[in-house]
Length: 409
Ligand code: GLC
Image (tube, rainbow, N blue to C red; front, side):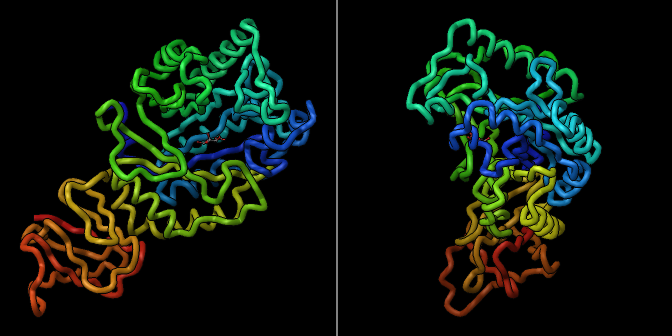
């Protein structure tokens, strides 16, 4: 087994953006975007009391939906630590709630057999040693902040120390998702990359680490996996000419952090299409939820997870352990493949019969996973205008989101 094999098999994970920003409920960039008076945002910590936080329930919902791992915001760009930091009082254990939610969450997801991933922000907008145009000061005053070398060194140390604590005190961590290096830092090693990575791999030898510790450049080291955002790739991602592991993260509505006003949730078909779109190009989907200030998933998010769970019950075998197919799918479909089995996902309902390229004489059986019915292969139909390698099939009442299992001979 390769260190990253489990991740390539898993295909589907849950992203959680949760922090003080859940209280104002305008997304996790509110600190930068909404002109908070100095100190007022930070004071939200005196109000944070998510009495309904129930990580066992979250883990259960995620697992039923087919998710195999979680990635949790241990600290976002607002600098607030959702774990019991040894290095700052600006942290979850210093709120009315007072408990280390990162530990509770890691334990609960592990207990359900899910992988545990920590998101940790590289920027910290509250620290004078982090200076970048993509930060509150610039948005509010138009002036680019400048850090003294001493402050910047202190900033780097704090980042290092936080990650070191997370890698030491929370058991086995499967994923480290560092976010992000701004384009203004493209040409410098602002975070002391190798120092962090040496420590992370020493403390957690099996961990996999994403690519955002550097702005994308050809001349930097290879990362364990690559993370496009809110988009599907059209193909297997290649870096420096070689195929790499990748995962796209996406929101369920239009925000990462909680936003009560944003009720525009994607429908089930959009979500399953996104997931199959990733798997069919050897990628993973990390689907996000922003829990509310009381520690609850928004109602619509729960509804989506339950719908995904219903779909996953019968369609799940087309996801876990599957990847891109060697074959060309018919019009309006996507393929995933595991060994000698193809899974044909219907992006849209076909107008009539489906024509499968390249599969003539290669199919043993086709089953509609939703209904369990066998799908007949049509050998001859009037004027036969198909290419010799094409196989015509006739599903009964096919619907978008259906999956046909094609067992090859
Ligand atoms: C973007 C957003 C950030 C979010 C991340 C998730 O970088 O700025 O707030 O956490 O996407 O990938």
